[in-house]
Each structure stands twice: as C-alpha cells, then as structure tokens.
Length: 321
Image (cartoon, rainbow, N blue to C red; front, top):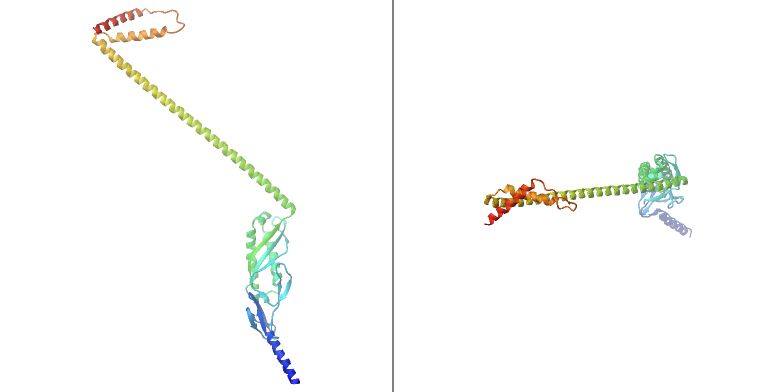
C-alpha cells in the first residue's frame, strides 16, 4: 500500500516535471533561458523543452500597449513596438518654451542584448528620446521647428538608432505629434500670418494694375503706330494718284498741242501765237468770273491778242477750204 502511494507521487512528480519542461513560445516572440543564473539559450517560436528548476526564463520589464504600465514578462516581443511619450516642455534656440510630444517606433532585433545590456529598456528609450528631442529642438528656432518636422524626425531617428544599437534595438521612425507654442506666441503668429497675407494681396493687386497699365499703354502705342502707318499709306497713295493725274493731264495737253501744232503748221500759221492767245483768253475768263467784279480793265496788249484771234479765225477758214 505504501509502495503504491510512493509510485503514485513519483508518477505525479514526473508528469508535473515534464509539464514544467514544456515551453510554448508564440509567433514573433522569443524567450531568454538561464541555466543556474547564467545565459543558456534563446528559444524560438513553437514548442521548446527545458530542464525545470535548472533552466528558467529571464523576466524583463515591458510596457503594456501604448502609454501602458511597466510589468515583468518572460517573453520578448519581436514585433515593431510603439511608445508614446507624454508631453514635455522644450526650449528653442530663440528661447521660446514649446510643448511637444512624440511617438517612437522600434523593434528588438537582438533579445540577448535587450535583456543584458540595459536594465529597464522602455524607460531608457523614453528618457533617451526626451533628452535627444530637447537637444535637437534647442538647435532650431521656433519657425524652423514648426516647418521642419521631417528634418527633426530624421535627426531624432538617426541619433536614437545609433544610441540604442548596443541594446539590440532598431529605431525605425520617430514622429512628432503636437508642437504647441505658448498662447501669446500663437496669437502673434496668427497676426503675422494675416499681415503677410494682406501684404501678398496688395502686391498682387499692384502687379495686376501695373500689368494692365502696361498693356493699355502698349495697346495705345500700337494703335498710334497703326494710325500713323495708315495716314502715311493714304498720303503716299494720294500723292501717287495726283502724280499720275498730272502725268495724264500733261500727256493729254501734249497730245492736244501736238495736234494743234500740226493743224496750224499745215496752214502756214504760227502755232506759238495761237497757244499764247488761248492761254490769255483763259486767264481773262478767270478775271471776270467773280461776283464782285464790276469794272473790267483791258490791258493795252489785249488789242494785239484780239487781232491774233481774228488771224486764227482766218487760219481756220483757210484750213477748212
């Protein structure tokens, strides 16, 4: 009876011992095993067997979720982890106190270093991020801080990645969530922005007015040039027309004189006297054609011209014969 009880207790001990030796590790997690207080091995995902009592997992501090509390865990999460840090006051290069909070994305790539190189990894990363953020913001003025988030994120990631490399941690991204200057600074910035917008509006309006005036002046200039060109062409055409008319008139007169000369010459007359007499008679007609001409003065030489007219008549009669 006593021997069976001993066997029962022994069997129960073996079962419990065997169950304690089975360790199931979840996917994307790992477990650091110590044997008698010394590092032994790192367990992969799946079912693993250890020696109970002799082997035991090393518990590490870990933060539960974003902004969660610290607690000890026997497994180490190998996935990318997000840490959100509380808001803190930092001083810019131009001595403006600004409230900033950030989010850090990192991943444990060497679990052994994360366990043995640092005692409290979450707190160490948080403090390192805060001090690095103060240093980076301290090198920038407020305007640069508000407009250079990508630059700040890149500097923070580079510095944190170099500092946490010996802890077996890879920092992938650092993001600034909020940058909150003091209220009076924000009010001054809003007034400055409104003044800048008003300035830009006035500049655009002045540039538009200037452009319209330039276009109007160019239009008037073009119109004057076109008008002058038109007048020039009109005068040229008028002069050419008058010249052609005078040429045609002169040609007609030349032909008429030629015919008269031929006619008079055939009658043994003098064509010069005939032409002078005709011109003289035309001028006398112009002299007496006015309304106010009451007295007609006949020059002495007119008698010779009249006699010439009689001679012309005789010449024409002889010509007809």
